[in-house]
Amino acid sequence: RISELQEQVDALMFNAKDTTGQRMVKKLKDLQLENQELAKQLSEDRLQDVLILVRAEKKRGEELQGKMKDMEEVCGVLDAENERLMKSVAHLRAATEDARFNALREPAETPVPPPSAESLTPVLPSASAAPVTTAAQHVFPTAAPPAEGSPTGTPVSRIAPVDVAR
Image (cartoon, rainbow, N blue to C red):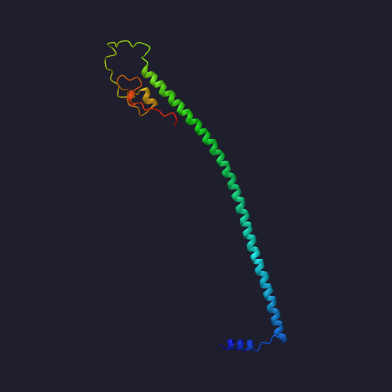
């Protein structure tokens, strides 16, 4: 408490015209200029750091835009390839449906001989024999066994129409 009071007394007795007072005023002005210069340098350093970060982000943005353009080109190529494949699938589907329709519509060209007595004898498969599958079940694993009188295994009424425009 005594030191505080002593400082207050010294402050009241301060005389700027005195030699000591003039030195103190000069010292204060020098310190203020030094503080201003340091603050300016500090802000310039911060500004430089920010400018460096901005330049780095601009460069990164340009790189990402280049990569994006490359990816857009790849997507365009993939879209064209996909479109070509879709047309090919539609063409093959139509050809398959035409062949299936023609096979159902046309009678068999070779006459089927009447069954012999031996072919009418049932043959039981052995326990180790593989299960019998039709060609349609090989091509379409979920296909049902051939329907009675159907050469393809699928009744005509169950064939779904194919939309070629897909």
